[in-house]
Structures are given as C-alpha cells and as structure tokens.
Length: 105
Image 1: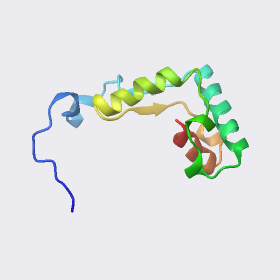
Image 2: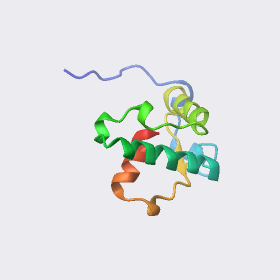
Image 3: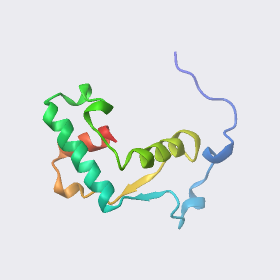
Image 4: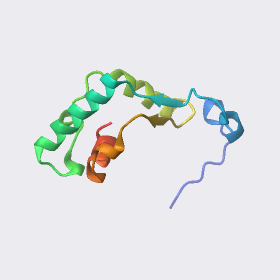
C-alpha cells in the first residue's frame, strides 16, 4: 500500500520552476581542493575492492568536502529539495568511477 501526501506543501520546498530561471544559489561549484578531496575518496574506496553497495562513509573519506556536503544535505532535506553539482570533471572518470563518486558523496 502506498501513501499519497494530501496536505499542501509549504516552506522552501514549495517552489515553482520560474523562481529558479536565472538564480544561481542552487548551483554548487566545487573548488580544486574539494575536487582533489573527492579524488582521494574515490581512490580510497576503490582500494577496498568492495562492491558499490558495501562501500560506506568510512571507505570514502572526505575531509575538505565534509562540511560542504553536510550543507548540501541540509538543503536537500530541509530546504528547496535539490542542488545542482557543477565542476566534477566526469570525463576524466569511467562510468563506474562517476557512480562511485556520487555514491561516496
């Protein structure tokens, strides 16, 4: 049995598309230091040899990104419900590595 939310949505989650037409506050651009942190986390997770579903936070260590990801998680959970991540050089990685990066984040 599924549940359908029947109450009106209010607060920051109650946005409409035109509100974000040219706004940039929902775009997260990562710095070179943050990208290097993601790279280190990726390589550490790969070194475990574990399948994706078994990789936990302890296998994908992030130091520089930790605070930033907490802020992003709060925005997704308690704010507008989404962010757009920009700057991760996905062409540098295989599809599996990109999947692991997003899993790790």
